[in-house]
Length: 336
Image (cartoon, rainbow, N blue to C red; front, side):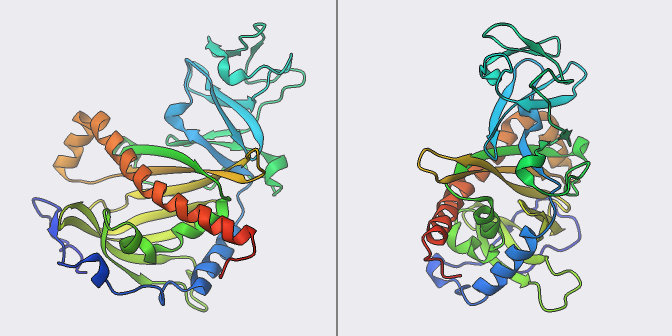
């Protein structure tokens, strides 16, 4: 696929090459289990500093608490009036009531059962956790669950400047482990085959080889389908900054520098002992086009739900595959 001419065009849309799903070139040889498995192994060996993505920054608010179980730990999060995010155990230290069903009053977390009021400084039997808010996502550090050497801050991917970007975060969960989500993202070869409604002409042009000084970078040329044969061709790279994150960054073409971050947060196990993982995907889109700037300012509330819907559609399909991968691994039938 030919990438866009570097000279600016009035519209970023291009007419994609005519093809059909069944006439694509098979990609199973290039997307070999050894290449994907090696990339996954290197990603899982990277330090996380015990940081886990908890939620979108917009979900942690000053007017109500947010609750989620991460790595089997019940958590509650809220903000004080100055915008600072806080997180702590989700059970009230008095009689164990769920604090996520409480209230936030003047920056304090209030339990609805008996009115116990908590701030970010702790209480006997209730100690807050380190929190990092990067403006897109809120992270929480769980040293006991992570089991690594703690880091002061999470490894936050490089992003476009937020004031000029459109940000959308979508979250959904599946019955698998974080490595199954990461493995799925480290297999870009499946894009045009498994998601023909979104991708066309996907070709992997660079993969890790031997003593490559940048061993964890994959590069793809792909057209993002808009309607019919019309799409936006780009070149993008995939990297893993930590063991539970895969970042796709546009390095040539429309939206240069824009990123899609896929974060896999372990939740715990269900009533049958099967692990559950949340896919928290953050899209930070940027462009110097006037049309994009206008859309961001005037139509952001309309565009963001569309961005989230597109991410949900992709991950609804990909989680099916991640769950399948976990099932085969856990029963000793995984071929990789």
